[in-house]
Length: 97
Image (cartoon, rainbow, N blue to C red; front, side):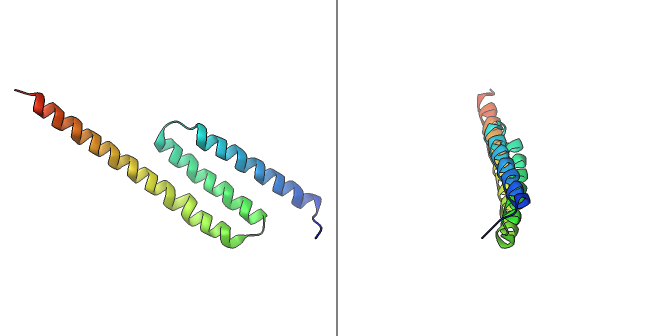
């Protein structure tokens, strides 16, 4: 199986983008921003799968990695923040005379 130089270049570029995206996800500190970066990373992975001629995997990645997982992360962050604010309010109400 022979590959053309253009195909090799596309694979190299897509792998480089995947590496840069992974580093961006890891280095993002705030969880809400990390969910957005994770969604963009999912798109980059989908492009890589298309370059590697795996459209079924790319479609699954778009559906799950770009939409569902970041949505779950954002919903979990909101729930944690609401629980923390309720706990802070209950502590404040207990301390009042």
